[in-house]
Length: 253
Image: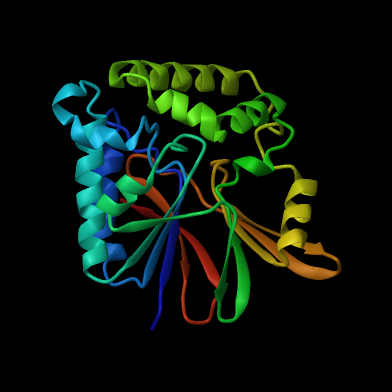
């Protein structure tokens, strides 16, 4: 029996130890024995560069110690035979190959098309679908620019920690002032993206609005499965078994 698990939006952070402990417990119980685990972005609340793994003693925020612990737990799962894949989100877009290697994982592009039971399924973080949020889309274009990323990664560690805190604060303030529909996906963009990739199933996170949406594309049934964000005491996953049918569920941590 083959089983693939997909999760998103854990937003791991030193200030949220309940989610970290819940995730580590989930890894040891639920993910153990799965053939593959896909983490579809915003795994960490913020990521300031893979070199943070070298500076646990210089990082008062606790991010480095958290990253080292999580990477070790993922590596153990990978060593036991589960293939692990990481996708960038809007919070951890600087996550790099060094962390992936430490975790025994591989980075995957956003979007990515996989096949389950010979049916193509599109995986995304989901932020690129929120085209009505023009301010965020402008920031996304900047943040995904390799030159901008190189400039940020060249900053001293302390400055990057401060920058991450500023971006978190600005994001929270901006979100509180935006209309609900602006922060959700644009339906026309969903249809265009799925049509361009030739799929009838899309799985993504980002919006923190877990649901299964059924609709039609060119007179064919289609579905969009949205993963939820993890909170103290509660997590979300999509399980895809041998029949290729994705199942969205929430569970107690």
